[in-house]
Amino acid sequence: MQITCYGEACGECGFRSTIFNCLSKEQLDLLSESKNIIKAKKGDIVVKQGDNIESFVFLRAGLAKLTRLTHEGKEQIVGIARPRDFVGLLSLFSSQKHQYSITTIEDSEFCLVDYNRIFELTKLNGKLAHSLLEKISQVADILISTRLDLNSRQIRGRIAYILCYFATEVYNSNKFNLPISRKEIGELIDMRVENVVRVLSEFRKDGIIAIEGTQIEILNFEKLSWINQHG
Image (tube, rainbow, N blue to C red; front, side, top):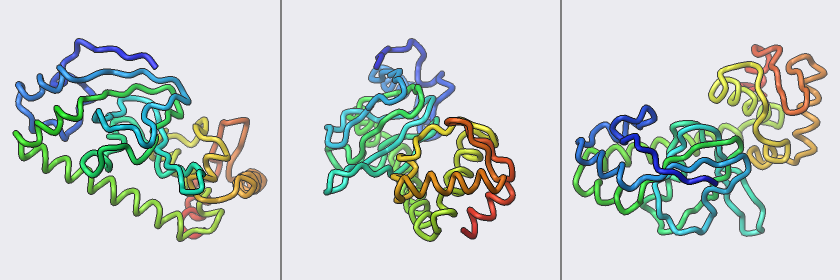
């Protein structure tokens, strides 16, 4: 991974989150003094589960997966981080160590701000503390809702959910390169990779999607959406 320090101040950054809108210029300058920009290639581990929490991690560009090792040593994907997401936010104030690993699934760019600096600013600025608590709550709600949504579906519905998610929430296109492998899809939806391959093949035969290598094209979004909702 390549680590650089940009001259661009946090107050002038186009990637700046609404969480930091409550900070004064002086407080934004304090953020700027303690940040690093990391450029990571696909497959790079940015944070490893069990590492000490030293930074506030913000995904500027790219995609990353959040994974957790089970007691059996199996890797389980718990979420996908998109641009302008705070990654690993749930562990920020609840633990001294990261509870998840963060691994890029596309070439990505992260902004890392010193954890102690963020903690100091929450003491100085109550609105920042409130914004962070609100964001943590939103992230928790999304993770719980996503897991409940997936668990309520059969295998076809789970695959449809993932394809609709990437089409509408990530790429805003019915044609995209699937950024995770069939094995990783299985980890995300808690299904065997053989079932993932089988259902994707069924969708292709039914004319719902076209598959060429990692490229997916949704040919019948209406039908895929129906399976997503009812499958």
